[in-house]
Length: 467
Image (spheres, rainbow, N blue to C red):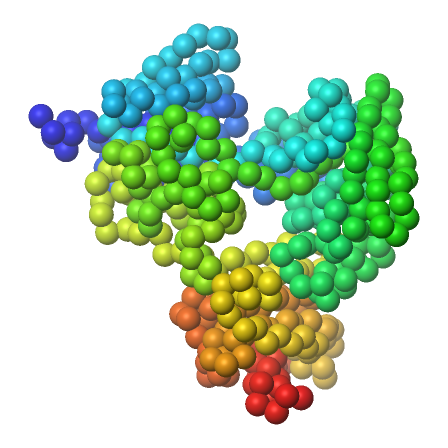
């Protein structure tokens, strides 16, 4: 009897965004299928993106970070195998070999398998880091287990100074979160500006926001060693400008990025692609029969770069949905790709970007021309107008829109204006197309020509006249 005539057994490894999205979509399309989700910890469907707001105290109960409760998932007909580590895939026998937290071995049989193992926090080559992580003063922050360990340290009430290593998106959110709690933050970034995915000019403005709120920021500074005891943490740092230095704190949090977790996929024989991630096509097929993959462990189909690695929660949800549909035999759905849209709130400011940086554009074969403008977010005669900084990049010869970044107060709507740019980028489109958009206008919220359109007009003027 073929699998279509039997109850389909779908096993999913990973209980975060992609894994749960796949499980829900599969159950939606084929209610009769048996869906089992295997996850390492006891926190299915939790929002890792919400961790900084739990640590700040803005989200008071950690359980509120769950997109859906354990009970809600069970009610959807999903069998959750928590605290179960997937060790190996046997694609020939359609078996998944696992080990439970109590040491017992478990083998699950499957007709279709989705690997959604996500990413792992990078441990940079800092002397003493591995040993320091074994104590209760130095932390990674990538899982709910990490978050609760940090909160336990914070709840003791003895943390006055925190050392944050890394100034990417999560690092900046942590700097705000800890500052909100009244903790002094020293932050270290190895590159020459925060948020390496945005241009230096916007990053410099954001750095002023951080320092104005009391964050002691050191860019172009490498943490070379770390040591911790029961009472304190000590860092050794090095920078071209100030040389070697040492600083102490009560806790240290390392946020140096992530890498795809592909060990399980390798046991299945899956191909590895850009960024060391699992290769998949747009239906999330790995090339191994009946094995799919989605989320932060897989490559991303980027509409400007092609195959790359760009782990984002929004992407994981979409990929998981496609994988769930494909695994139960629905052929129509495909992952349409991304343009790299990201946003982060830092204190009272929002910085957002979509598309490519200049360096990425050059690597992709474009010749970028970029301008930066400062415009009003709404008519200045209406009270409360704020300045919105916009950087727009497009190909100098073809005028193809390549990237947009924005920085402004929360009230400026940068987080939604960037969505307009992302929608246009996905077409693809030329800068001229921005001028034809029919955008909403009322004096308290905008201008007759939206700030994005004003920037587009200035870009065209520079492209034509050079000034």
